[in-house]
Length: 109
Picture 1: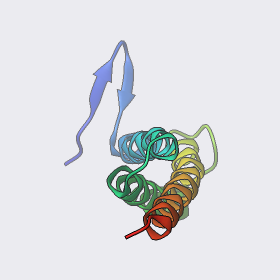
Picture 2: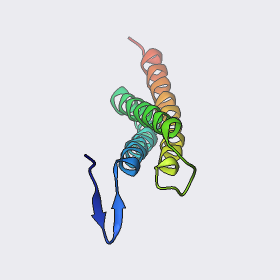
Picture 3: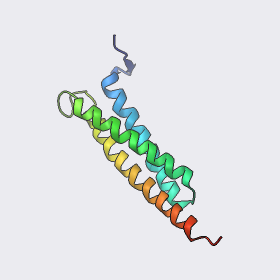
């Protein structure tokens, strides 16, 4: 049993859906990570870290198990995008978290 979504004659199956969702989550992590760098606080930085990690892991697992190369419809391009965006989200979230820790440690008590 397989799930398919047909949009304008284009079939979007599980092979493409999983890395697309992973890339979308990682992209949200990148956006939140950039926002967390601009604003102090640990909450957004932690969210960016988690979303980046999810995108990285899911993209890497799907890319390792994808049969065929780019353009075969197995979601390899989405998996590569998810890995790249996941790494960026992790870096931005880590920088924002480190910055928020530095700010909280430098405050006088």
